[in-house]
Amino acid sequence: MRTFGHWIASPWRRGSVAALAGALPVLAFPAPGLWWWAYGALVPWILLIRSAPTARRAALDGWCGGFGFMLAMHHWLLPSLHVFTLVIAALLGALWAPWAWLVRRFLAAPDGVPAQGRVPAALLVVPSAWLAVELVRSWQGLGGPWGVLGASQWQMEPALRLASVGGVWLLSFLVVAVNVAVAVLVAVPAARVPAVAGLVATAATASAAWAWSPRPDVDGRVRIAVVQPGVIDGPDARFDREEELTRRLAGQDVDLIVWGESSVGFDLSDRPDLAGRLATLSRVTGADVLVNVDARRADRPGIYKSSVLVGPDGPTGARYDKMRLVPFGEYVPARSLLGWATSVGKAAGEDRRRGTEQVVMHAGPGLRIGPMVCFETAFPDMSRHLTEDGADVLVAQSSTSTFQGSWAPEQHASLAALRAAETGRPFVHATLTGVSAVHDPSGHRIGSWLGTDTSAFAVYDVPRADGTTLYVRLGDWPLHLALLVLAALGLTEGSRAVRRHGGVGGGQAAPSGSPTARTTRSHSS
Image 1: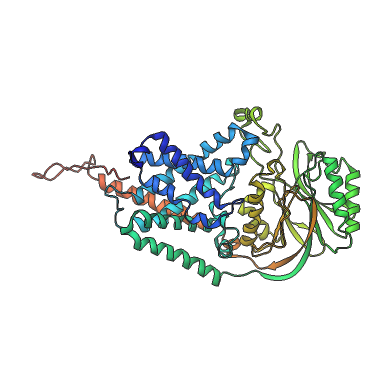
Image 2: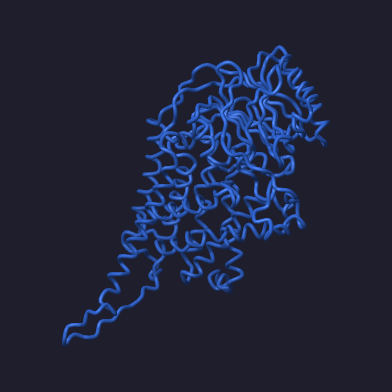
C-alpha cells in the first residue's frame, strides 16, 4: 500500500491538501464560532509546509493554503460574485507564499531537526510574517481586514483584554505563535523546550494583560434604541416599517435611535416629506434619530452612503459620508480592467463616492457619537481615531441583507466586540436585517442579538466610559514590531550572505599554497 508521503507527492494532490489545510481556521469564526479551534487550526498547514521538498514547493503550499483560507472566509460572496470570488481568493492567496517560505526556513532541516536557535526565532518570525500578510490584505483596495485571525477570539474575556492593549493584531500574533509551538511539539520533540517556553510566554502575556491593563471607567449610562425592519423590498415600504417601529419607542426615555445602513433610499433634501416624518419621530420619542441615506445627492454629483442625524426640527446638519467602500459591492477597483465582473455577478454598476473625513456628532446633551458604515467596522484604525476625536459611543450602520442565511451577518456583528474592547467605548451595531448587537466598553455583549429572522426594535442601557485604552494611545504597535522583526531578519540574512560570499570576486586572492576556496549554497532554505 502506498504511503501518504508517496500519495501527496502529486503536485495537484498536495495543492488540494494545502488548500484544505488553509481553510481550517475559518471554523473558529462565526457562525461555527469554535474559538478554541484557532489555537491548533494552522498546525496541519504548518506541518505540510515544513515537509515541502523545496523552498519553491513550500511557497506554493502557502499560496494554495492562502487560497483555501480566503475562499472559505468569503464563500458567502459566491452567489454575488460567482467565478470572480475564486479569482480574488487566488490573487490574495499569493500573499501567504513568503510566509510559507519562512515557515520552512525556520522549522525544516535536512535531518528533520531545525538548527539550534531556529525554533525560538520561529516563534517570533512566523507570527510576524503572518501579521505582515494581514497588514497588506487590510488595504481597503484588496478587500480590507475581514477575517483577521485574532478576530476569531471576540468572545473570550482574556482576548478582549489583550485587544485593549494591542488591538486585534496582538491577538493574531499570539494565536499564530501558539500554533507554531504546537506544530513543533508534534513534529520536533527534540525542540520541545523552546516550544513549551513559547506557550508559557503566551499565557504569561495574557495573564499580564488581564491583571494590569487599564479597565474602562464607567461614567453613567445612555439608552440607545436599535430599529431593525427586517427583509423588506423597496425603500418606501422599508421606511414605513422603520417609522412604525420607531413610533413604539414613545415614552421609553431613549437618548438616541439608530436605523441601519440604507434605511433611507432618498436624499432628504429632495424628499422634505421624509425629513418631516423623521422630525416628527424625533419629537414623539424625544430622541435624535440617526438614519443612513443611500442615494444620489442633490448638492453634488454621485451616490453616497451617509449617516445623517435628524432632530425634532429636521436634519441637524451632522452628516458622515462613508469613506471606505466595499470592493465590487459599492465600487469596482480599476473598473476599466475589471469591469467585466458586473457581467458575471452582482458587482456595482456605478461606483459610489467616498467621504473625506470622519465625523463626531453631538446627539443630544452631552452625547457624542462616532458613526461608521458597514464594512468600516472591520478597520481598527477608524474606531480608534473616532475615540481619539472624543466619541462617547461608536455606532455602526450596516446591512448584510444580500447574504441572509450565510455566515456573514454573524461574522460582521462579532467585530463590534473587538472594536469596543480596543477603544474602551461602547459599540452599537445596527442593521437592516440582522444581526444587530450592542457591546459595552469592555467588549461584552449587552442584551441579546437581533437575529436575521427578526423585525423589531430593542432598547439597550449602554454604559459610558472615560479614559483611553493602551491600544488607542499606542496605536498599531504589534504591526510595527512585526515589521521591525522582519526588517532585522532581512538585515541579518543579508549580512550572512555577504560574509558567506566575501572574497569571491572581491579582489582578495587566496593565500599562496592554500587550496582554492569553495563556497556552497545551502539548500535548507
